[in-house]
Amino acid sequence: MAARKSILVVSYDREYHDLFATALSLVGYDVLRTTDGDEALAIVLSRKPRLVILQYPVKVGNATLTATIRALPEVARTRILNITPRNVPETLAQAELEGVDANLIMPVPTGRLIAEVKSLIGDPVDGRG
Image (tube, rainbow, N blue to C red; front, side, top):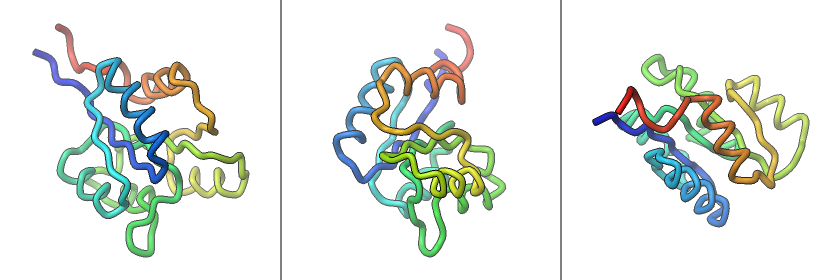
């Protein structure tokens, strides 16, 4: 049996946290969730999800989760999707500078979210079957 790809959703906003996690689970992704940057980093290091969805900046100590992931060779290639409530060019530019792979601005319809996730990591299941 093929393995399902995992995604970590890191969000302080419970409504979006639940919406994104549910939509991605329904199409077949294995969704991990947290509201805490330190816990998110621990999950990235231990579970190695294919994608981290966050609202930049999620903090880990004095750094951001994005910068921390990019600085660690064992997880540096993890895809990162920033979903933000406001179109603030400076914040989006900083997120891109630190290494997010894509930015989406809320509201994000679930179909758009799923399409973006598939463009970043492919279909929910590895291999065939």
